[in-house]
Length: 348
View 1: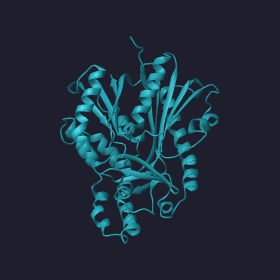
View 2: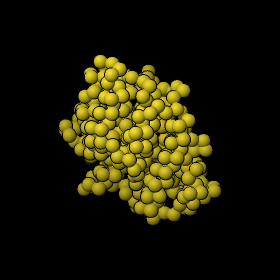
View 3: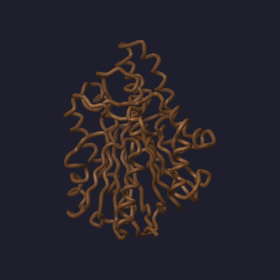
View 4: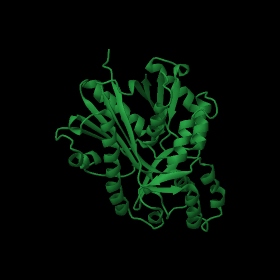
Protein backbone atom coordinates (compact mmCIF):
# COMPACT_ATOMS: atom_id res chain seq x y z
CA UNK A 1 0.00 0.00 0.00
CA UNK A 2 1.39 3.41 -0.94
CA UNK A 3 2.24 5.87 1.83
CA UNK A 4 -0.41 8.39 2.84
CA UNK A 5 0.23 11.98 1.80
CA UNK A 6 -1.61 14.98 3.18
CA UNK A 7 -2.28 18.51 2.02
CA UNK A 8 -0.99 20.26 5.13
CA UNK A 9 -1.69 23.86 4.17
CA UNK A 10 -2.71 26.14 1.32
CA UNK A 11 -2.19 29.86 0.78
CA UNK A 12 -2.66 32.40 -1.99
CA UNK A 13 -1.14 35.78 -2.84
CA UNK A 14 -2.13 38.62 -5.17
CA UNK A 15 -0.21 41.62 -6.52
CA UNK A 16 -1.12 45.10 -5.24
CA UNK A 17 -2.69 46.72 -8.30
CA UNK A 18 -6.46 46.27 -8.74
CA UNK A 19 -8.22 47.03 -12.02
CA UNK A 20 -11.96 47.00 -12.55
CA UNK A 21 -13.33 45.19 -15.57
CA UNK A 22 -15.14 48.32 -16.76
CA UNK A 23 -11.83 50.18 -16.77
CA UNK A 24 -10.14 47.43 -18.78
CA UNK A 25 -13.01 47.37 -21.27
CA UNK A 26 -12.77 51.12 -21.81
CA UNK A 27 -8.99 50.96 -22.23
CA UNK A 28 -9.35 48.12 -24.73
CA UNK A 29 -11.83 50.17 -26.76
CA UNK A 30 -9.43 53.10 -26.82
CA UNK A 31 -6.52 50.88 -27.94
CA UNK A 32 -8.25 48.50 -30.35
CA UNK A 33 -11.59 50.09 -31.22
CA UNK A 34 -10.38 52.13 -34.16
CA UNK A 35 -8.45 49.30 -35.82
CA UNK A 36 -11.24 47.06 -37.00
CA UNK A 37 -15.00 46.73 -37.09
CA UNK A 38 -14.39 43.24 -35.72
CA UNK A 39 -13.72 44.78 -32.29
CA UNK A 40 -17.42 45.63 -31.85
CA UNK A 41 -18.25 41.94 -32.28
CA UNK A 42 -15.66 40.92 -29.68
CA UNK A 43 -16.32 43.75 -27.20
CA UNK A 44 -19.16 41.99 -25.29
CA UNK A 45 -16.62 39.45 -23.96
CA UNK A 46 -15.64 42.05 -21.33
CA UNK A 47 -19.19 42.27 -19.96
CA UNK A 48 -19.93 38.56 -20.36
CA UNK A 49 -16.71 37.27 -18.78
CA UNK A 50 -18.08 37.10 -15.25
CA UNK A 51 -15.15 39.25 -14.05
CA UNK A 52 -15.61 42.30 -11.83
CA UNK A 53 -12.01 43.04 -10.84
CA UNK A 54 -8.51 41.67 -11.28
CA UNK A 55 -5.10 42.11 -9.70
CA UNK A 56 -2.11 42.99 -11.88
CA UNK A 57 1.62 43.12 -11.32
CA UNK A 58 1.80 46.62 -12.81
CA UNK A 59 -0.63 49.56 -12.81
CA UNK A 60 -2.85 49.87 -15.88
CA UNK A 61 -0.82 52.70 -17.39
CA UNK A 62 2.17 50.36 -17.77
CA UNK A 63 0.23 48.08 -20.12
CA UNK A 64 -0.78 50.95 -22.41
CA UNK A 65 2.72 51.21 -23.83
CA UNK A 66 4.41 48.71 -26.12
CA UNK A 67 6.78 46.56 -24.09
CA UNK A 68 9.73 44.53 -25.31
CA UNK A 69 10.52 40.95 -24.39
CA UNK A 70 13.41 42.06 -22.09
CA UNK A 71 11.09 44.53 -20.32
CA UNK A 72 8.45 41.87 -19.77
CA UNK A 73 11.07 39.41 -18.54
CA UNK A 74 12.49 41.90 -16.05
CA UNK A 75 9.01 42.51 -14.61
CA UNK A 76 8.34 38.76 -14.53
CA UNK A 77 11.50 37.91 -12.60
CA UNK A 78 10.97 40.63 -10.00
CA UNK A 79 7.19 40.37 -9.66
CA UNK A 80 6.92 36.59 -9.80
CA UNK A 81 9.63 36.27 -7.15
CA UNK A 82 7.75 38.60 -4.78
CA UNK A 83 4.53 36.62 -5.22
CA UNK A 84 6.39 33.30 -4.90
CA UNK A 85 7.81 34.33 -1.53
CA UNK A 86 4.54 35.81 -0.28
CA UNK A 87 2.50 32.68 -1.07
CA UNK A 88 5.21 30.26 0.08
CA UNK A 89 5.84 31.96 3.42
CA UNK A 90 2.11 32.14 4.09
CA UNK A 91 1.68 28.43 3.36
CA UNK A 92 4.63 27.48 5.57
CA UNK A 93 3.32 29.62 8.42
CA UNK A 94 -0.11 27.99 8.19
CA UNK A 95 1.54 24.57 8.23
CA UNK A 96 3.70 25.45 11.22
CA UNK A 97 6.75 24.50 9.16
CA UNK A 98 10.03 26.41 9.08
CA UNK A 99 11.55 27.07 5.68
CA UNK A 100 14.64 25.14 6.80
CA UNK A 101 12.46 22.02 7.14
CA UNK A 102 11.46 21.98 3.47
CA UNK A 103 13.06 19.11 1.56
CA UNK A 104 11.83 19.84 -1.98
CA UNK A 105 10.29 22.75 -3.86
CA UNK A 106 8.10 22.33 -6.94
CA UNK A 107 7.82 25.61 -8.86
CA UNK A 108 5.15 25.87 -11.54
CA UNK A 109 5.06 28.84 -13.90
CA UNK A 110 4.43 29.28 -17.61
CA UNK A 111 4.12 33.06 -18.05
CA UNK A 112 7.79 33.97 -18.00
CA UNK A 113 11.29 32.56 -18.12
CA UNK A 114 13.76 32.79 -15.26
CA UNK A 115 17.07 30.94 -15.18
CA UNK A 116 18.05 30.48 -12.38
CA UNK A 117 14.43 29.62 -11.64
CA UNK A 118 12.27 31.29 -9.03
CA UNK A 119 12.91 28.90 -6.13
CA UNK A 120 16.68 29.36 -6.56
CA UNK A 121 16.21 33.12 -6.40
CA UNK A 122 14.04 32.71 -3.30
CA UNK A 123 16.39 30.43 -1.36
CA UNK A 124 18.41 33.01 0.51
CA UNK A 125 15.44 35.31 0.98
CA UNK A 126 13.34 32.55 2.54
CA UNK A 127 16.08 30.64 4.34
CA UNK A 128 15.67 27.41 2.40
CA UNK A 129 18.40 24.82 2.93
CA UNK A 130 21.29 24.53 0.49
CA UNK A 131 20.42 20.87 -0.15
CA UNK A 132 16.73 21.44 -0.93
CA UNK A 133 15.62 19.63 -4.11
CA UNK A 134 14.46 22.04 -6.82
CA UNK A 135 11.88 21.02 -9.43
CA UNK A 136 10.94 23.92 -11.76
CA UNK A 137 8.11 23.07 -14.19
CA UNK A 138 7.20 25.07 -17.30
CA UNK A 139 4.50 24.69 -19.95
CA UNK A 140 1.50 23.36 -17.98
CA UNK A 141 -0.52 26.57 -18.31
CA UNK A 142 -3.89 26.54 -16.57
CA UNK A 143 -3.43 22.90 -15.50
CA UNK A 144 -0.25 23.78 -13.61
CA UNK A 145 -1.71 24.11 -10.13
CA UNK A 146 -3.34 20.68 -10.21
CA UNK A 147 -0.42 18.92 -11.91
CA UNK A 148 2.03 20.68 -9.60
CA UNK A 149 0.15 19.30 -6.60
CA UNK A 150 0.29 15.85 -8.21
CA UNK A 151 4.06 16.11 -8.66
CA UNK A 152 4.51 17.28 -5.06
CA UNK A 153 2.42 14.33 -3.87
CA UNK A 154 4.53 11.82 -5.79
CA UNK A 155 7.70 13.27 -4.26
CA UNK A 156 6.26 13.16 -0.73
CA UNK A 157 5.02 9.60 -1.27
CA UNK A 158 8.46 8.49 -2.46
CA UNK A 159 10.03 9.84 0.75
CA UNK A 160 7.31 9.60 3.42
CA UNK A 161 9.05 11.79 6.00
CA UNK A 162 9.80 14.62 3.58
CA UNK A 163 8.13 18.04 3.38
CA UNK A 164 7.39 19.32 -0.12
CA UNK A 165 6.49 22.90 -0.96
CA UNK A 166 4.61 23.51 -4.22
CA UNK A 167 4.33 27.06 -5.52
CA UNK A 168 2.56 28.13 -8.71
CA UNK A 169 2.84 31.74 -9.83
CA UNK A 170 1.61 33.31 -13.04
CA UNK A 171 1.82 36.84 -14.40
CA UNK A 172 -0.64 36.38 -17.24
CA UNK A 173 -1.05 40.12 -17.82
CA UNK A 174 2.49 40.29 -19.20
CA UNK A 175 1.02 38.65 -22.31
CA UNK A 176 -1.14 41.71 -23.09
CA UNK A 177 -0.21 42.87 -26.58
CA UNK A 178 -0.89 46.29 -28.11
CA UNK A 179 0.70 45.29 -31.40
CA UNK A 180 -1.70 42.46 -32.18
CA UNK A 181 -5.39 42.59 -33.03
CA UNK A 182 -6.82 39.09 -32.82
CA UNK A 183 -9.77 37.46 -31.12
CA UNK A 184 -7.41 35.47 -28.86
CA UNK A 185 -5.62 38.64 -27.75
CA UNK A 186 -8.92 40.44 -27.02
CA UNK A 187 -10.21 37.47 -25.01
CA UNK A 188 -6.95 37.32 -23.06
CA UNK A 189 -7.22 41.04 -22.33
CA UNK A 190 -10.73 40.42 -20.99
CA UNK A 191 -9.77 37.44 -18.82
CA UNK A 192 -6.21 37.51 -17.52
CA UNK A 193 -5.09 38.41 -14.00
CA UNK A 194 -2.00 37.72 -11.91
CA UNK A 195 -1.57 35.65 -8.75
CA UNK A 196 0.21 32.88 -6.87
CA UNK A 197 -0.64 29.94 -4.65
CA UNK A 198 1.40 27.60 -2.49
CA UNK A 199 0.80 24.41 -0.55
CA UNK A 200 2.72 22.20 1.83
CA UNK A 201 2.49 18.46 1.21
CA UNK A 202 3.78 15.75 3.53
CA UNK A 203 3.16 12.26 4.83
CA UNK A 204 3.23 13.62 8.36
CA UNK A 205 0.56 15.69 10.09
CA UNK A 206 -3.19 15.58 9.52
CA UNK A 207 -3.49 18.82 7.62
CA UNK A 208 -6.43 19.90 5.51
CA UNK A 209 -7.06 16.80 3.39
CA UNK A 210 -5.64 13.42 2.47
CA UNK A 211 -4.45 13.34 -1.13
CA UNK A 212 -5.97 10.18 -2.60
CA UNK A 213 -4.81 10.02 -6.20
CA UNK A 214 -4.04 11.98 -9.34
CA UNK A 215 -4.65 11.48 -13.05
CA UNK A 216 -4.45 13.14 -16.45
CA UNK A 217 -5.94 12.80 -19.90
CA UNK A 218 -4.35 14.33 -23.00
CA UNK A 219 -6.25 14.36 -26.28
CA UNK A 220 -4.32 13.68 -29.50
CA UNK A 221 -4.23 16.27 -32.28
CA UNK A 222 -5.10 19.14 -29.92
CA UNK A 223 -1.80 21.02 -29.68
CA UNK A 224 -3.26 24.16 -31.25
CA UNK A 225 -6.19 24.59 -28.81
CA UNK A 226 -4.28 26.47 -26.11
CA UNK A 227 -0.73 27.68 -25.53
CA UNK A 228 1.82 30.37 -26.31
CA UNK A 229 3.16 31.67 -29.59
CA UNK A 230 6.60 33.26 -29.18
CA UNK A 231 7.87 36.21 -31.23
CA UNK A 232 10.33 39.09 -30.62
CA UNK A 233 7.81 40.89 -28.37
CA UNK A 234 7.28 37.89 -26.08
CA UNK A 235 4.40 35.49 -25.59
CA UNK A 236 1.25 35.70 -27.68
CA UNK A 237 -1.75 33.75 -26.44
CA UNK A 238 -3.36 30.87 -28.33
CA UNK A 239 -7.02 30.40 -27.41
CA UNK A 240 -9.23 28.33 -29.66
CA UNK A 241 -12.84 29.53 -29.62
CA UNK A 242 -13.97 25.89 -29.54
CA UNK A 243 -12.75 25.26 -25.95
CA UNK A 244 -16.25 25.39 -24.32
CA UNK A 245 -17.75 23.15 -27.01
CA UNK A 246 -14.78 20.80 -26.73
CA UNK A 247 -15.33 20.59 -22.97
CA UNK A 248 -19.01 19.73 -23.37
CA UNK A 249 -18.23 16.99 -25.88
CA UNK A 250 -15.18 15.43 -24.22
CA UNK A 251 -14.69 16.24 -20.54
CA UNK A 252 -17.35 13.92 -19.12
CA UNK A 253 -15.91 10.73 -20.58
CA UNK A 254 -12.33 11.76 -19.83
CA UNK A 255 -13.11 12.58 -16.20
CA UNK A 256 -15.02 9.32 -15.80
CA UNK A 257 -11.96 7.46 -17.02
CA UNK A 258 -9.60 9.37 -14.72
CA UNK A 259 -11.63 8.80 -11.55
CA UNK A 260 -12.25 5.13 -12.48
CA UNK A 261 -8.50 4.61 -12.32
CA UNK A 262 -8.58 6.35 -8.92
CA UNK A 263 -11.09 3.73 -7.76
CA UNK A 264 -14.44 5.54 -7.75
CA UNK A 265 -17.10 7.01 -10.05
CA UNK A 266 -18.16 10.54 -10.93
CA UNK A 267 -21.27 10.03 -8.80
CA UNK A 268 -19.04 9.44 -5.77
CA UNK A 269 -17.44 12.88 -6.07
CA UNK A 270 -19.00 15.24 -3.53
CA UNK A 271 -17.58 18.45 -5.00
CA UNK A 272 -15.67 19.16 -8.19
CA UNK A 273 -13.24 22.05 -7.71
CA UNK A 274 -12.61 23.40 -11.20
CA UNK A 275 -10.33 25.93 -12.80
CA UNK A 276 -12.59 28.84 -13.82
CA UNK A 277 -11.14 29.57 -17.23
CA UNK A 278 -14.11 31.79 -18.09
CA UNK A 279 -17.86 32.03 -17.72
CA UNK A 280 -18.57 29.90 -20.79
CA UNK A 281 -16.06 27.27 -19.71
CA UNK A 282 -17.77 26.96 -16.31
CA UNK A 283 -21.15 26.49 -17.99
CA UNK A 284 -19.60 23.83 -20.22
CA UNK A 285 -18.05 22.01 -17.25
CA UNK A 286 -21.35 21.94 -15.37
CA UNK A 287 -23.03 20.47 -18.40
CA UNK A 288 -20.26 17.94 -19.09
CA UNK A 289 -20.09 16.76 -15.47
CA UNK A 290 -23.86 16.57 -14.99
CA UNK A 291 -23.91 19.33 -12.37
CA UNK A 292 -26.74 21.71 -11.67
CA UNK A 293 -26.41 25.09 -13.36
CA UNK A 294 -24.63 27.39 -10.91
CA UNK A 295 -23.12 24.50 -8.91
CA UNK A 296 -19.61 25.85 -9.45
CA UNK A 297 -20.35 28.87 -7.30
CA UNK A 298 -16.94 29.34 -5.68
CA UNK A 299 -15.38 29.15 -9.13
CA UNK A 300 -17.55 32.04 -10.28
CA UNK A 301 -16.65 34.05 -7.18
CA UNK A 302 -12.93 33.63 -7.82
CA UNK A 303 -13.37 34.50 -11.48
CA UNK A 304 -15.26 37.66 -10.50
CA UNK A 305 -12.67 38.72 -7.92
CA UNK A 306 -9.42 37.71 -9.64
CA UNK A 307 -10.00 36.83 -13.29
CA UNK A 308 -8.22 33.89 -14.91
CA UNK A 309 -4.75 33.69 -13.32
CA UNK A 310 -3.94 30.40 -15.07
CA UNK A 311 -2.30 27.80 -12.78
CA UNK A 312 -3.01 29.33 -9.34
CA UNK A 313 -6.70 29.99 -10.00
CA UNK A 314 -8.01 26.56 -9.00
CA UNK A 315 -6.09 26.87 -5.72
CA UNK A 316 -7.94 30.13 -4.99
CA UNK A 317 -11.14 28.14 -5.54
CA UNK A 318 -9.96 25.30 -3.30
CA UNK A 319 -9.15 27.79 -0.54
CA UNK A 320 -12.78 28.92 -0.55
CA UNK A 321 -14.22 25.41 -0.83
CA UNK A 322 -12.16 24.27 2.16
CA UNK A 323 -13.74 27.06 4.21
CA UNK A 324 -17.22 25.68 3.41
CA UNK A 325 -18.84 22.86 5.41
CA UNK A 326 -16.63 19.82 4.69
CA UNK A 327 -17.52 17.28 2.03
CA UNK A 328 -15.97 13.79 1.99
CA UNK A 329 -14.37 13.82 -1.45
CA UNK A 330 -13.19 16.73 -3.59
CA UNK A 331 -11.75 16.44 -7.08
CA UNK A 332 -9.59 19.29 -8.36
CA UNK A 333 -9.58 19.64 -12.11
CA UNK A 334 -8.09 21.98 -14.67
CA UNK A 335 -7.65 22.08 -18.43
CA UNK A 336 -4.37 23.16 -19.94
CA UNK A 337 -2.17 23.11 -23.03
CA UNK A 338 -1.70 19.71 -24.51
CA UNK A 339 -4.79 19.71 -24.58
CA UNK A 340 -4.89 18.10 -21.14
CA UNK A 341 -7.27 17.54 -18.22
CA UNK A 342 -5.46 17.19 -14.89
CA UNK A 343 -7.13 15.93 -11.69
CA UNK A 344 -6.28 15.37 -8.02
CA UNK A 345 -8.62 13.70 -5.53
CA UNK A 346 -8.76 14.95 -1.93
CA UNK A 347 -10.45 12.96 0.85
CA UNK A 348 -11.57 14.19 4.27
